[in-house]
Length: 337
Image (cartoon, rainbow, N blue to C red; front, top):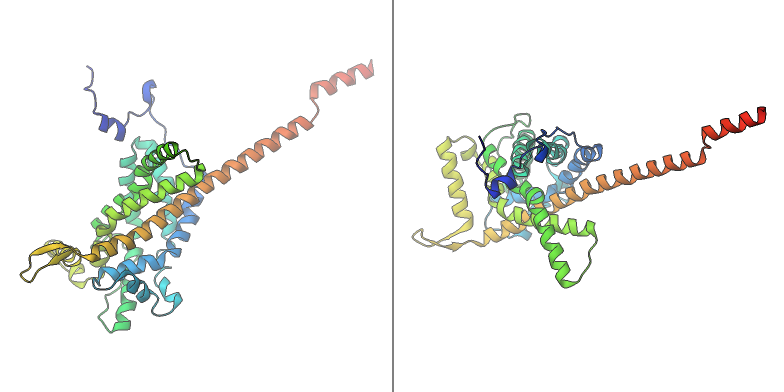
């Protein structure tokens, strides 16, 4: 009995594995350069961008300050204070970015679907990074509270991979990862058409970087409210110790207070300038994070390809320099005769 034809959207997201030959796809372990890019490049990206991440945490608890004032608060204790809590997510960043890179590629081959691979990788990423990122946010918040004399929040155990705010963390990771994994090829295709119309040539590496950057910017805009909800959740005593309904009300109240203008009677007048501030700060962080990681990932693959080509060229040159065995044997026989 024939199966019903699948829709175009379903075929695009979940293509048949094995193609026309009917062979099942084999699970392929990622190449060593991809593993090294995740294990070494990930911690480098996370630690380098710690000040931008800490600024987002402070912004979730202060809707009155501008982006510039928030960044000044991050470095209020000196230049090194901008990296407060930056070493906490450093070690988990190794497996975290191995999930974003090598595990994603492995899941994509196994599942035959990029969106499904993104969701699975985002859940695994949250399981690894939730505890350390929560502590990082709380340390940045407590540092600001000590400077202003406000109440601090107790630090979360970084070895507990779940807790209040975890579901928001997963949703944020799915949206953020979709930029470089799902929408970046679309952006690069549109960029190729635009450059062709304009008659401008652009190197492939630069074109890929621009595509990653634009796609990451779009994902950053979509994930900004989710990210701020997470930062608010892990730095709010009422949310951390409330019931499920209380937590939902706290998040709704946070979104209403932060991103909507209210009149004297509580009526909604429009969007708050805080929304534009948070979108800009989130774009600055996510675009730099995923573009930098995408550059490291491709550079590692390109470097590995160069090394493989050099080895092949060296091996072929050695074969050419070595005289044929059959010819040497023939000459020896003639000399004996």
